[in-house]
Length: 298
Image 1 (cartoon, one colour):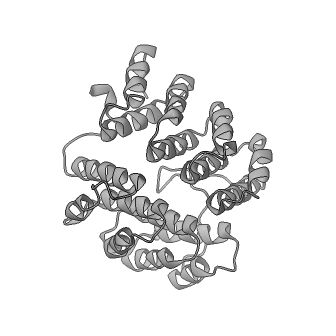
Image 2: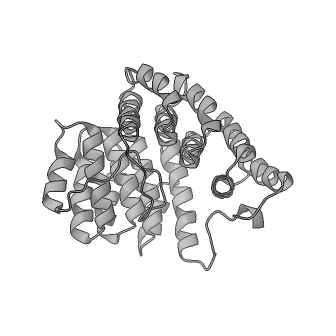
């Protein structure tokens, strides 16, 4: 990673925090800062928690977690503790604290594992389970996907057995997440189709994570299931938003026309904005750009 000056970082940070700029530009600025990392980038990223877009704030929390830098713990803790914030943002702050994975975040996660908002309490419990796994000697493996996952994959390789674990709602969610990431890592059509059945599970948090993981896998085998869930206006917007971004990540023929259907004002903000970002992802996937996070060259 090359060295960047404070002026370069500030230029990108100001773009991220400019509400008048198109959301797709601000997302690219966010991921540029994530790729740079360090205290200055974290400070600029954290400023975006004052934005009105829940989608952007959610993505801000995600990026801070992926950096795994303890410098982000104070702001993420503040966001989690603020019950006036949107559940999608608080949930992502909790997951980010779990991604950072240091023992100092345990107390705040335990406190909010009893939060009345299910997406928040379930995420905190997941993060606690991750911390306990790390404390027992677990180590993140980014060999296949360059992301810090909420749970490590299981050693089990049999798709049928993994599917059984994935869909068993009597098991701890951490165990089911482990099956989810195992199916993602396998990545063949059978595993992707099995993973997509998780979109019918009871927990909105679980369904949202299944959609996110299907987007990571970027397999056209999941397009139908993701489209059905995106079209369901009774679905939790947190899930629909993740389905939209997953479709953008897959970027297969026909996806653009589907995403354009949800750009109207009648859509929930987080869904509409996700479709804007997803369409930008499709454009990127069909371009000759070297990388998505390219705000320094803007």
